[in-house]
Image (tube, rainbow, N blue to C red; front, side, top):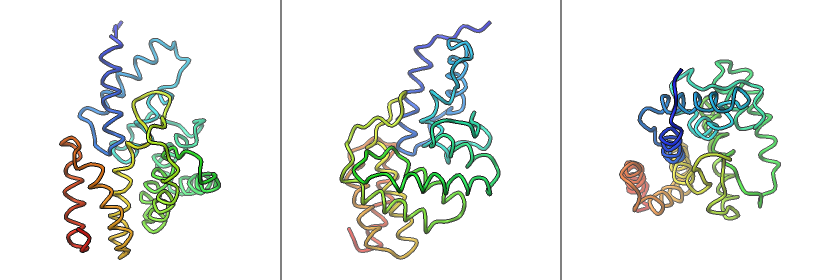
Length: 222
């Protein structure tokens, strides 16, 4: 029987969570998840789903995982996890229906409610289904709500992932989608925020800063 040392496994999980939040794919992501799932199964005696712990990696890493690597099913209780399960199920029809239900709930949330990453998840889900126009609408809605958002709202019960850690990748995606649709004023606002947030960041996010700076030069917003 394998004996897992919890500390290194959990440390790697926290390390991966921070990078997934930024939109960066950590080395050995799937191996990290399998190790933690084994640990949960061993110490939880089958009472805890791996998704209850790995949810932050699954939700905001949905588009960063190799196909078929998410240990999810469509009975997940958290709406974000449930949508992720449908989006990665290989059934576009069911995915569209679940996304429509998800959007209805999210868009009905009062504007001052702390945003839990659902609008970014919605945008990425619409992109997966080929609808960049609605994806951009969701990110513009996030911009409308952004001024009400606290910096350090925890997005998942486990893992180092707080609200502001998603903002850089959110603005970068918003800038890219807006620029592609000729909405240059929206794109410039978004790219300027990327530069402002990430200029002093680690090397992993500097390609995003470079991309934003180059886009600003093309759009005349530098």
